Amino acid sequence: MKQGRGAISERAVAGGHRFGFCGTDLVAVGSGALWWPERRMLVVSDLHLGRSERMARLGGASLPPYESFETLERLEADIAACDPREVVCLGDSFDDSAAVRGLPEAITDWLVRLQAGLSWVWIEGNHDPGPVALGGAHLGEMRAGPLVLRHIAAAGARGEISGHYHPKARIASVSRACFLLDRDRLILPAYGTYTGGLRTSDPALTGLMRPEALAILTGRQARAIPMPRR
Image 1 (cartoon, rainbow, N blue to C red):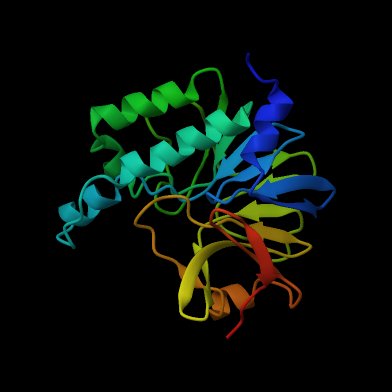
Image 2 (image 1 turned 120 degrees about the horizontal axis):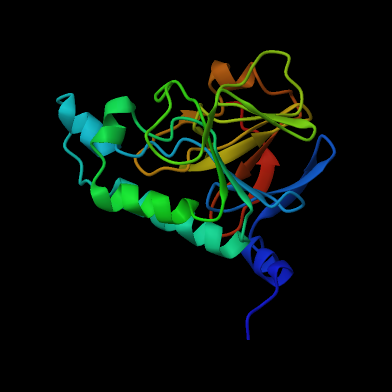
């Protein structure tokens, strides 16, 4: 028997970290996605689809061209688990504009299938500043209730959800992708494979986040800790 939407969403966020942010109730999912249950909005950032193709094209390291498939497998699983009405990609969805044109047909077809029946928004990033030849809306930033969603954090913003920095927290000798959260802003981890990351102790992040900021570690069980600053 088919489960109701509420049961689907509860199962999806069972390992997530629930928190309040600027009057909204959100869930940091262990995959690196953000789930807004009331609005049925799933948010991901920095997919960087086509990274291996771009690196090969520019004469960099040769990587197996499977990162786009792995990224979309996780995104498909999160969509199936959460049953969203909206999906928002917070910029740098593609490694550059040429990478969009170089994507295998299997990837573009997969994206089309994922978009079916959903309101899909591509936020512009610094790697993919122009509209892409795929369905969905293409915006510089997006306002949703009390929140604003954009790629790069803006000074003095409140109620802001962004990406760009690929934050990672180093705990002992282990580095984990993480969300960063304070009362004004939320920075999402990179969702894509082969994306690297910026340590939370970097001045670019310590200068953005308030002293009481939390790092929400991704993984099977999302967990909040004080943001590491050293």
